[in-house]
Image 1 (cartoon, one colour):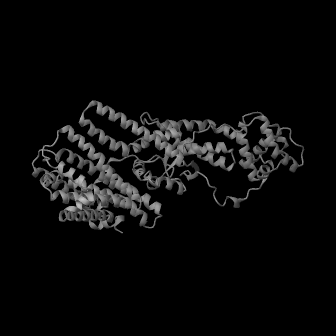
Image 2 (image 1 turned 90 degrees about the vertical axis):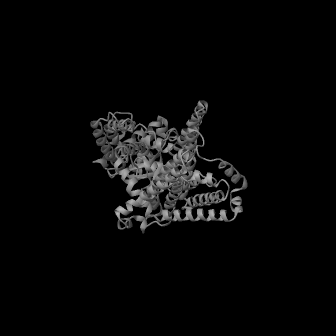
Image 3 (image 1 turned 135 degrees about the horizontal axis):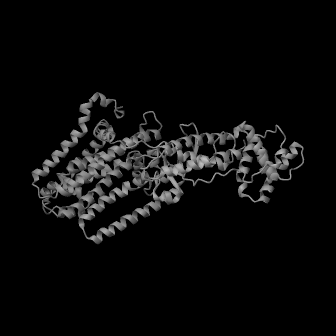
Amino acid sequence: MNVDEMVRLHIAEWQALEADVAWLRRPSISRRDPRRILDFSRRYRAACSDLALATAQRFPAETIDYLHQLVADAHSQLYRTEAFSFVSWVRSLVVVVPLRIVTDPCFWIAFGLFWSLFLGAGAAAILRRSYAVDLLGAAALAKMEEMYSQSPSGLGNDAQRSMMTGFYVFNNAGIGLRAFAGGILGGVGSLVILGSNAISLGAIFGHMLTSPQRGNFVEFVTAHGPFELTAVVLSAAAGLRLGWALLDTRGWTRLESLRRTAPEALSTAGLATILFILAAFIEGFVSPSALPYDVKATVAAGTAALLVAYLLAPLAIVGVKRGRTQPYDA
Amino acid sequence: MPSEAWAASLLRDHDPSRGASAPLDTALVLVSPENIAFEYRLAGPAPRSLAFLIDLMLLVAVAGVTLFVVSVSGQMALLGFYLAGLFFLWWGGSAAVEVLGNGQTPGKRAVGIRVVSDDGLSINVSQSILRNLLRVIDVAPPFMPGVVSMIVTPRMQRLGDLAAGTIVVVDRRVTAAGPPRVDRGPNLAADLVPAGFSPPLALVEALADYVGRRRVLGPARRQEIAALAATRLTAAWGTATAGDDDALLCAVYDAATTERHR
């Protein structure tokens, strides 16, 4: 049998496989015919051996090209990615992610860096009024003071509040994702965004606490503070994890180390995004509400306690010993 | 065409040492569990930038039309939903359509490229989200790290691809795989090939290329090209020149490949 006859013999099967691939690519997963799927996998294996034969027998280049494309297309349909599992997703969110975060030095570095810069800038702004002015500009501070010149209690109507909630999601969660993405540059991008936000937030806090609008300011920022500030720290921690994977490769090549770490960092960034969105709702609807300050303070204490419990409970249950076997405790 | 050089390369023996350093190519060879190696063609920065611009324009169009509808409605509450929606569209929209489109966004489909995992499989949700989140760094001015990364990495990956373990490949339109010889009937030149003639591997490969492409050549051009090799072959065999050089080369190719198959 020569090449000509071989191609004539197999071409119908190849075209049938082509049709199968087009059929499997169609988005509707319903009406899947199991017999056709069996036919597809049989045809795929046949095409694999045809490709091997074609290469060994020096088939014309266009035929080999065609078979390469056919096998590649069929391969990506046969070996599909693992289906989404709700149970493993919940387990990951409730157990794996918090355990990974609290055993990750990157989280504690981001945490320590954020709070030391925040408190340092705050103290500097309290001690010297010119500090915040030099850092942020007199105009921005005057605008800030004007913003808090009236009590946030009962501010705005529901429409304005939902608009502001949308804005907080867009703006704050966007900053968080940028802090995460910046981590790919050896962690530098994350550190810059974390540091600049910590310093400017600290300066604003320090400045406002020494201004006449102190009461209004505190009343507004209390409720959403824990979620929002933790989300900033988590975003930067996720970015640092990416950057750190490039520096400390744990025996892998740099790229392989990055590839293995990236999904884990992504889950931390995902958690940060969830916190940003929750914080946006609190900031949009609780912080400017007419609720008494005690309620807003309780919301702050409750969310802070929830965060601590969420992050530390898996460690407490699984035990410090198990925690030590996590990869980041090296 | 320098016919002497072409014929020389046609008849040159296969030299394995020449294949020692892989040629600079955009082909990526992957091995499947069936132990078969198949090729992907990598897509470079140019088509990928074009696909990105198309997607960006679509995104701006969707965001603009929605903003228009929201502002016409005059509902401030809708603006909140719009901004939150814009967040998800901006950061997750590409990932969503990429996963649903099996590695293709509308822009990629228009350009004819596709994202696949670097082991040749379809991308999963996490890979797609990761590479699309990191795009904000990849396109960051002034250095455009993603473009630099595409140029320096062997598989033309931007930073998002490196972290997610993905590659962007050309989604070749599958060409019809016709039989190499369309003109049927017994090949009259087959008798001219001496029994037991076994051509060197490089010649078989060259003949495979010729037989594969002769369909797109006119009859006169076929004869012209085929004569270059055929006259040398008949001279080496010490036989009279064949009347139909094209048929002779097809016959040699048939004989060589049929022999291998047995």
